Length: 278
Image (cartoon, rainbow, N blue to C red):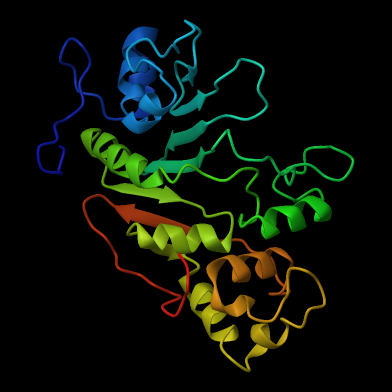
């Protein structure tokens, strides 16, 4: 049963209730694409002159692609302005969980007009799987100096605040109460806090990080200029802390951070209340 005001249980064209992505994926291609298309922010369709009905641009070419295999509880949505472009404008990956919750695996919204920074490949041009297979330090420095956060290849379109309410209503319409996610970086975690997420695991680490960056404490002392990512003053901003953590200042892996959003409820968590930027 849907819980948000004005929201209804999602049904197919014959009125049969839908409770999971797997249920949606059993529908005919056109119907499931119509349902998934409602997750994409309307401002994105308008900005790039894409029809929310046909998913085609003004040139008649298809811009929105859905990967939603029958029999599986997952969906990937890609909005790409040109067929062979390396980067998407909008990339979303979601999945059912075994606990009747929704996993928000990835949501990336890029500004295609902004410069690209090749932080997603190593210095030989090979995919580095979010730096787990090596870093591209020169590109990371360029990216950081341009005001980006770790793992960002482009500036964003500041459209997550458009997307999340649509996604909440979609999840609610399936009768689910919880969205779960795994922030890949410190700044992701802080950003999710702003939107009402709480922690399944990792809150203690987030509080320890905040304490460690206070004046005179261990992480603040390690901001000694020994690398471009460890400059004095980085403790005061989300971006600075995130780059320092990306550079290994914690001396332990950034992992096992799991977060959740209860539909219709904002947790009000803030593990960095002194921050100068969100």
